[in-house]
Image (cartoon, rainbow, N blue to C red):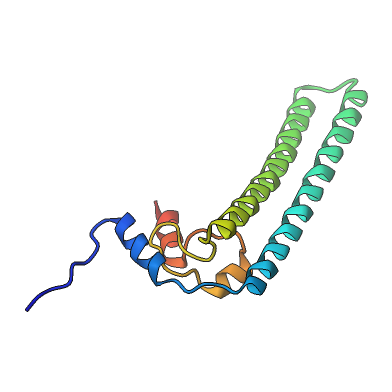
Length: 143
């Protein structure tokens, strides 16, 4: 009995999975692209608005700092760091959407970057810039 050789490496498994993939129609691809571009634009606008708000709050803090004690200064610093963290999180989401657009152009959108299996449509509907299937994402989060 002759056995068929199974891929041993992750790259080989991904190549086999990629070869087995179906292709999307141009209309489906364009629909996904439009949705991703809209989401990216929304996030960029949110990021820009957040930066404007941070600048305004910082200006207000500078003019309203007379008589501050150490606790007030600490609170203001903490609040500023939280605001910057929120802005950075939005920017990271923008980068994720841009990466999803790149993957769409390369033909890898909707397929797990680790195992090469299809990412469930439900996951992509909830998180369109997902790059990992549910199983690989769960494994990654456990680490």
